[in-house]
Structure formats: structure tokens, C-alpha cells
Length: 131
Length: 253
Image 1 (cartoon, rainbow over the protein chains, first blue to last red):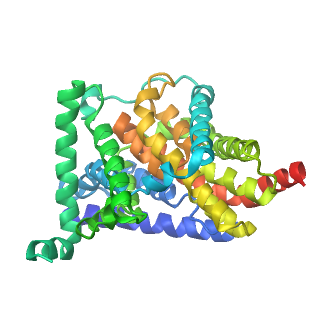
Image 2: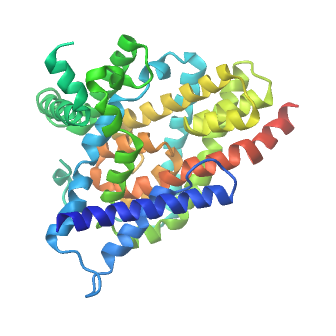
Image 3: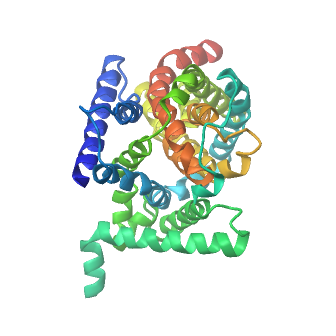
């Protein structure tokens, strides 16, 4: 059933968010520390154990896949609700701070990527599938 | 208020689905017609969304982009943190666990380095603009990390609301720039595999920026970048008002 997949996804999110909140509380910050990351790891782990005890059939799987496919439209909605006016009217200092932070971070990516060893393409599907 | 307007406001989330659907359709047409698909349709859609958000801000004077227009209030719900995180987590389904393990250390390190580097750059800009108060320098530096770390740090240190507003603006500039700029620099920084995507997420840290930037570059990279980015704000909120503030105070007190 489709709802099994949606429920599993929701369960992973709530568990991850709760863990992130506990972690934030533990180290004394008012922020969710890695809640989404924990939820993702949980979902990946669950989707990687495919034995008799735990297996999603294609119908249930489509409940997760639907939300994965909705990701880009949701991100577009997110872009449309950003406070772009405040970003642009924050004055030169805010613009410079933001631009330089991004430029320096971009420059560091090749350096740090090398740390993770040979970066062979682990993406199997061809480029045009991304559409 | 017309009947139709009333209906669209009442069914706000449904209206938002139609709005985003039309926006996506237009963007993919524009991507084909104007750039022959070279600039990805989702990149066009995100840029168009940001442009409309600017127009919405000018029209209404609010802080939620187009979502401050009553008919489009559902966009705030659809594009809000709840649905965004739900969809981000869903992208992890079927991601390669081995790739994540292999880049684990570099990913974790990139979060730490990313927070410190963005903070240092933001703080340096604040100093170059004449700020000498350690609280203000720290708050603006924290804003250069993300627009959440800025106000959290500023509030913790008792910064003025003008400085907090600046830190939010710096974070917003960063987030918008990451969304729009990533597809253009992706080739030059080797952003085409799970490992570099994890490093990218950790260094950039802005969840909305990374989410949009990777979607516009290659959606298959989303789970890897999003995974590390989600730790960034937490680490930032931890380091900025403590260790990084002490460092700034030692330099400027």
C-alpha cells in the first residue's frame, strides 16, 4: 500500500527530528542538530536491509518515490517565498559578506573532495536522466 | 473580493500546486527555447521563483516573497521547512550507503571548516566596514554562515536588531547566490559525484541554498549534499556564540 511508504518516510522524519532536537538540547543550542541527516541515514539503512522481515513492495515504494519527485517543485516554492528583497536591500556589507563567503567556500570544494580519495563517478544513470 | 479569489485563498495549498506547476512548465519551456536546455529547467524555475519573490516583496512589503500575496499564501506552506525536509529525506531513498561512508570524514570535516571559513569571511567584511564591537562582528560573521546562525548568535550575545537584520541579509545573499550560482560553477569545482556533493553540502551549509543549488545542477546529488548541510546550522549555532565569539573578543577587545 502506498501509505506504508509515506508512513515510513514520516516515521523516519519524526525520529530524525526528535534525535536532532535532543542532540541540540544536549549541547545547549537552540537548533535542530542534523535531524534531517539522521532521518536520511535511517531511511537509507532501512531501504538497504531488504530481507524477509523488512521489504517494501513496489506500491509502498511509490509512496516514498512520489515525495522524492516532488522535491524540485517544493524547492521552487521555497525559492518563491524567500525574502529576496531583504537580501538585496541589506546594503553593500551584507552583499559582500554573502558573496565572499560563497566564493571562498566554492574554492575549497576541490581541495576537500580530494580528502575523500578517488572521486570516481558512483552515479550510474546517464546525465540526461536528471531531467 | 471575488468568489474565485475567495476560493483560491481558502484552498491555499491546492492553489500553490497549480502555481508551482505553471512555473515549472514555463521554466522548462524557457530552458528549451532560450538556452537549448543548457541551463536546466529547474535552475530556470528556481531563478524565476526568486525573481517573483522579489516582486512579491516589493508589492506587499512582507518578508515571505510571493506568499504574502493572499492568493499565493499556500506557497509558504508548500515551500516551508516541513514539506522541504520531508522531500529532502525522501530523496535519500536508494542513495548509495557506501559512497556516504567513504566520504564520511571529508563530509564531517567540511562542516567544521565551512562554518569557520564563512564566519571568518563575514567577520572580516564587518571589520573592513568599520565595526569594532566584538558582538556585532561575531553576529555578522555568523550571518555569513547561514541566516539562522546569525540571529541565533546575535540574540544569544545581545546584539542590536539592526546588526541582527544585517546578519540575516548576509545569510540570505549567501543562500540566494548558492541556489543560482551552483550550476554555473559545478563543472569547475568537480561537483559531479557523491563525495564532492557531501563536501559541497558541508561547506555551503545553507539548507535552502544547497537544496536549490543541487536540484538545479543534478538532482541525483541532492541526498549527499543535503545530508551534510543539515548539520551545518547546528554546528554554527554551537560554535559562533562560544569559541568563535571568544576568538573575536580576544582580537578586538
